[in-house]
Image (cartoon, rainbow, N blue to C red; front, side):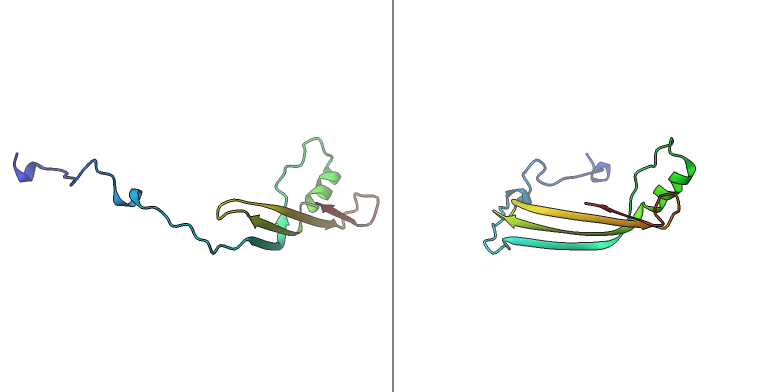
Amino acid sequence: MELGDVEEYTYNFGETPEILNYEFEKSKNYKRTRFALNTGYSYRLAKIADNIPAPARDYYKSLKSGCHLGFDISFFTSETLAFGLKYNLFTSSSNNSYSNKESSRVNIE
């Protein structure tokens, strides 16, 4: 076979690559707890049912946007395993006249 006829050549084909033989060193200096706080503007993506009347549909649509606040705390038992707590609050308000009150405030926890 002529050198010009070779389309592809692989050196040491079939040997295990060196990176697969590398063992990662486990860190002893990882943080045991993690705390996160999040807040911001939110928008609910759920669809409003088709059988809702038009005035109520506008009212529910106005309640889909609001603010959220949340936090979570994790306790690590090892570098890759943890257990924790999570809390989320979504709050929204509407000045739509569909409800019996002049304005409405809704909280979802």
